[in-house]
Amino acid sequence: MKLVYFGTGTFAVPALRRLAEHISLVVAQPDRPSGRGMKLHPSPVKQAAMELGIPVETPEKARGPEFVERLQAEQADALLVASYGQILSQKVLDSARIGGINLHGSILPKYRGAAPIQRAILEGESETGITLMQMDKGMDTGDMISVVTTPIGPDETYGELQDRLAVIASDMAAEWMPRIVAGDYERTPQDNDAATMAAKIEKAECELVTDREAQEEYNRFRAFTPGPGAFMRTQFGLLKISQARLGTETGEPGVVLSTGTSCQVAFARGSLHLLEVQPEGKKRMSGKDFANGMRLRPGTALI
Image (cartoon, rainbow, N blue to C red; front, side, top):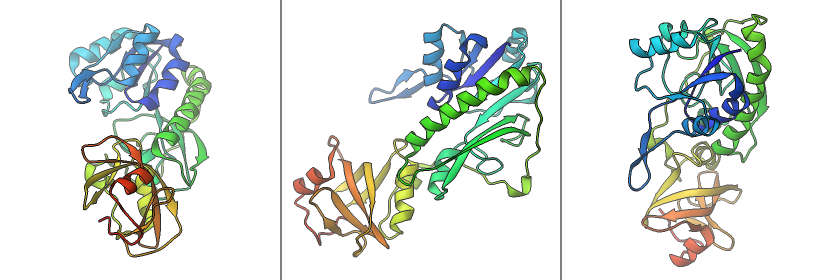
């Protein structure tokens, strides 16, 4: 079995490690600037591939004719794709004998697109999963091969759920890729009428607003933790929220309800306990320390 692996994000690393002995080439997105100095950093998949000693290519556009020739030269049985970040052209898919096989982080046809795990949490779903699918040139529209479902914990964040799903995806790849390469698999077309889209996350979506219901905003916090990161606009400036829990107490939205063990803030129909925060221009601290430092008391307006 000979595979070319397309992946970029953390989600794609476990499957890469699991099938490394069968992978002749890894394709990842180009290094991107990040951090305070905005220096170029390799993606998690590129880093893992280098550790494993697998050749890595990072084309800006995978559909370029020269790169397609590079893929054709591999004479791979299949392309295995997970969290890559580009739509692959038909010529790219045709570069391998069986085409492209994708590990997608949702129960298709729901949540096609760039951010399926985050969108499922944001929408308050109680279940998600991994769909192993045969790729076509559309956006996650290909035939399904296998689906494994898993519950979403009521307090589970995007980062925690992504890590769990990544392990499920690696198990599925290890089980199914030998069968797929051997031609021993069936395909089920998706119900396009039931499809929903999981668009790329915009920064503005990460803002928690106290006039909205507490459960809705807790889902928002979970969906965007650890990245891109939830935040609130307060009278003290922008407040990043890195740890929070749903509360049951009620009060006027935007008002502090308690400061004993956290900074508990009222939202519509409930509250959130802010357990760890980062005020503008400062380091992370506990919600309790933030409340004490700002001399917040029950009844104080945070917003």
